Image 1 (cartoon, rainbow over the protein chains, first blue to last red):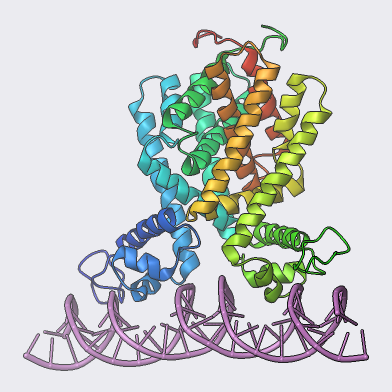
Image 2: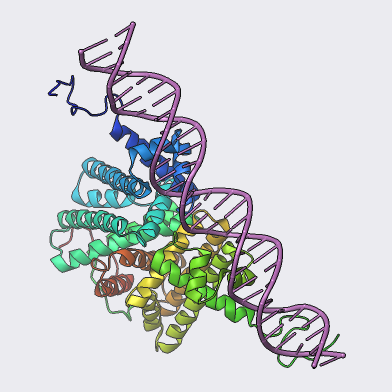
Length: 214
Length: 214
DNA sequence: CCCTGATCGTAACAAGCGTTACCGTATCAA
DNA sequence: TTGATACGGTAACGCTTGTTACGATCAGGG
């Protein structure tokens, strides 16, 4: 009964396969399918084909399709957070940290445009799936919290309420740019997006003048 | 041959039914299904049930499901544009016109939150449907053009390029607020949204100060 | 008053879906 | 080497999908 296993592996469990690696592979395939064929095109067979395996492996790796979707959503969040961390670490001063994190979150390159398509598909799926909606909120609130923290570092004199408002508004701007650029890159050209972010950041340090001014 | 028909009805055509009214009824049902069950829940049977008819009527009114989706999308655009027109007409001065149009486009009441869910579903469907994507672009560009026009009325001294940037940024902010509020009304509370719009408009008439200022 | 045909419901169709059961195979302990 | 078993592919299941064919019904012109 109490057999010693060579490595840190639970007794009686799988011997050869790497479950986590398989889950990641299938999640990656899920993103590819979502970006290419949309939410309606996301079938277990399509994911299996994209991953180069059969539906059998998919259903042995995840209990059902919804679990696959949730795992893929979670992993996407994780990867996004990692990239944001790296962007933070790479920047020199607090203000450029904020600017860099916002810029990398926005759809500048073509591969990020695909990611925005995946994001839209998840949002649409979350409309009818409470678990996905919960993941969506969790992810987005983490992003808002990150921007809030970067704001307080960059502009320490900003009052708390104004900072909270700025954080949600900046996140809304970023996600709006992503969503719109995903389907109309001509109107929401990368340059356009960059200027939108830069302008929003620049105006953070201004005071309003009377609206009638010329 | 040249029989006189009692009302303005084409010769040789249907005698009793009002095709357009039926299309509108089914499009309304489509919105309801999309808001409640998401894009995945949108089936011909669900639409028929919601409209209180059978799948037969649906398929006699539209050639196929995609046509139903497109008509519903078009009608949504039309209704949205009408509301924006009314908001414009109701406002007194150019600046309040701009503010009113932006505010009514944003998810303040609960029924508009449902509309945002429908919008997300359409965006997700457009990822894999070129025709829907074209409608999406057309609609959104019309909205950008409207904001651009209102901006030029409200702030005539704004340079052309700055005005174009402001228009796309404001639309991105609005759609971002809608998308995020649709799934997290707690974080994106109506008050929060209103402040985000007001701030963005207020800062339009400011000039940047040195970033290090306190 | 009947007859034509427009209108819409009924019911079936093939295709595709998520999911399950089963079986060959490779792998590791003994 | 051998036996047990974890693994993953195959194929089928029942169900739902979009779509089609057909039949009942009813309005309107002759």
